[in-house]
Length: 115
Length: 113
Image 1 (cartoon, rainbow over the protein chains, first blue to last red):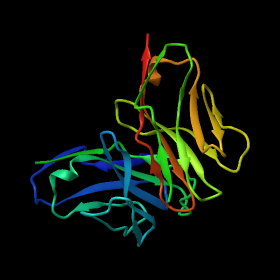
Image 2: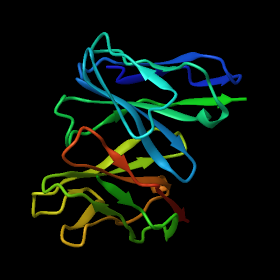
Image 3: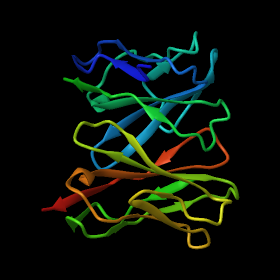
Image 4: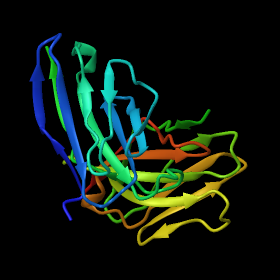
């Protein structure tokens, strides 16, 4: 199993540009989530999904869109990038859509720089 | 609402010694789960240990153990026989009553040779 994969590893954007961060898992996990990690702030939940076709907002959803058309993929879209979105982004997944208490498996992260 | 607080931005420990990292988790839920994750310089998040709040027994994984004090909302991580490879950021996280996992701000652990 490849586990949780994320692409790209690093990206530079200009303010106003759009892009999609890709996340895929091959463990048949129902629950998937996106976090951003900023210095001194830990990981903050952006969006999550409990199964294909079902998504919901986390702590910091503004400026980000998600969709979940398949169990395997959970892309994160930035519609109009802002410097405040400069961060490291992590995708994670866990086995059960119950979500609660399940161990999350993390991808390697995507470092995003918005100029 | 749930909150996770890690009040130690940085800790140091001598190799082979023991260190304890602190965390407090506040929630109105009676059933919840607590986690410690390790993030080495590679940035990969790795689960260290998991504790279920309804279990009386503290979780243990080899050199890592927790001291869970439910009434005090305390969830500390003890690392015994510290090794150079233990140097990393450590994040405490909680999940109770919702699909949302909340992380603390992290503690950077330095291991001195």
